[in-house]
Image (cartoon, rainbow, N blue to C red):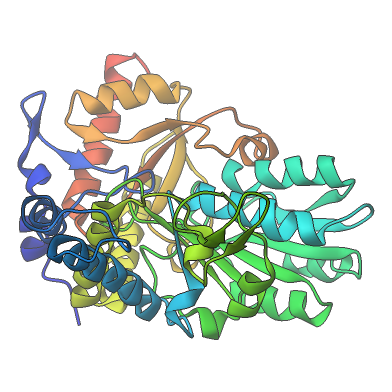
Length: 410
């Protein structure tokens, strides 16, 4: 099924905005996506009609809020094909979800001499928590390198996977290169030597059909705000057996079964990891975002992005002085990071904003990857379900105009 792009765009009221008297072209969904009307309406209705704290009240508003909030968990579990709703933990975002695993599973299972295997294309959120853990526990970080064209050097994987590796943490899709990683193969090979696998799905889950049982991963982390949902709500999927054996992440209300002066016992999954009042309305908004994406069909979303980014790559590659990072369209998602002539990415982003085009400039929380590629910063245009080939044309035209303004034409 093909997306009806005009109908999709009509669902996003922010796309009607004018920026510097130009129609908004939003090309920064890799950082945070825009929100469709069904999500905005669901959150407004929650605040207007049934807002109350969840889980503890026996009055009508609390029971309604609890029902809506926990229904969102069921929707997420179905969306990623978790075996049970107990495997879906609500967090603030991907970063918190990864830290939860590092602080709980990691501190219980990683010791001196153990290894944690990452890749050179990881976001800082999937590097820094493991650095902290490794320094604290006397473990070692090792990295699967990337090729010059932005693919993982899979032929090096077996050399790095040995009995010392206890955890493999890998992105599903690079937020700089757009590279879609072969997570199923990595999981299979990691499990063969007894390692646990965490997948950073921040860029993958919003854009691709995801089935955690098919992938076989032990943990999957992702954020609501990158998948048409609100900020402040994220997800950690974990295999139930692992979650059961992990100590709590935060202590406080809702994550306890019984509290005495000198000891406490913990609540059942998933609430053992959800201390305090949760992001109630944000959770309801995430549920509405899942409904929206499932209504479109994730296969259709992925196909639309492949088509759009293929056109964008062709259009941008035709510009003299353009260097596009990452693999061809068939091996990447909707992310296109590039350098253009010798224009600083921040200058370029500013001039593009004057044309109504929102892009990201900088290292995109991936400094080691930029260093590997011999760069300090890049400009990044990221495409999502509401972007069109015509917007790629506008981007190319605006880049040429920016070059003329800065005396870099020709």
